[in-house]
Image 1 (cartoon, rainbow, N blue to C red):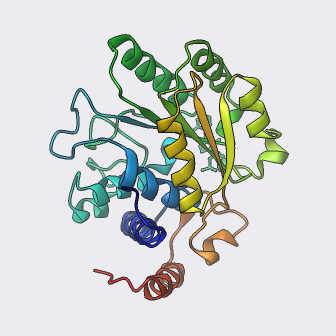
Image 2: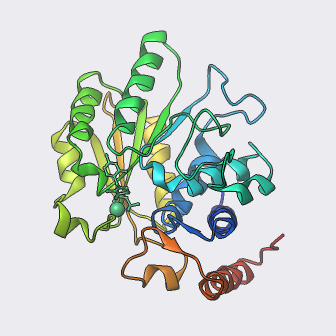
Length: 283
Ligand SMILES: Cc1ncc(C[n+]2csc(CCOP(=O)(O)OP(=O)(O)O)c2C)c(N)n1
Ligand SMILES: [Mg+2]
């Protein structure tokens, strides 16, 4: 049975608290592009992805390929929520010899399926995993997350063509359409145009969903996993970089920031307000 809106919103908030735990332990980090993925991660890790925290490399697991690897804190927080490791580990982000490097690292963090950070590569890795499942005849699914700035990389479009050619309908990708990258807006740096039309033109089933609409995201994933259209699926998330904390959303440059005590307090009080509205106990 699929979860209620309230459950998904509570879990998204738990993931945002975890992101804050990680980033504040390092007194800064990639906050904008991590916060805006919390709602999607809540839906995927609550209702859909078949993974086993007791056996992170289970041969029959679904995969999560986080191609925008700088958003490691978001994935780590979701993995912690799912039970892959205890919350204390989130307080180790990016420390020397850390078991929680800033960018996603499959060799150090249980539940991470690909080491990423050099943008543009993850969709190809996801294609390989999805194609392998097809060849083996398993029902494994591969989830993948790419950024809109990242979509300036040519390799993304090579992978998009590959996924359509090999009819990888077990590949469900998300594009974080926040119109921001490291150096400014995506429109300024490298226009993307309409990603839904673009992926459709590449032979994908693509649809637009508001990035905070947990039920919209749930419906989109559910239709991707239930209908076998022989096409890969792109769910374009219309997000605001930093969403979930107004004071971060409103910062012109919120890509990778120093988190002062004052800013941390502002974010935490916004999250606490949301927790109160959701009647959620914060531990
Ligand atoms: C190949 C490569 N080029 C450049 C970078 C530097 N870089 C890190 S994050 C980033 C912006 C990515 O933008 P986007 O995909 O929109 O992610 P968001 O900032 O929205 O999280 C860039 C250019 C990189 N990591 N890899
Ligand atoms: Mg972006």
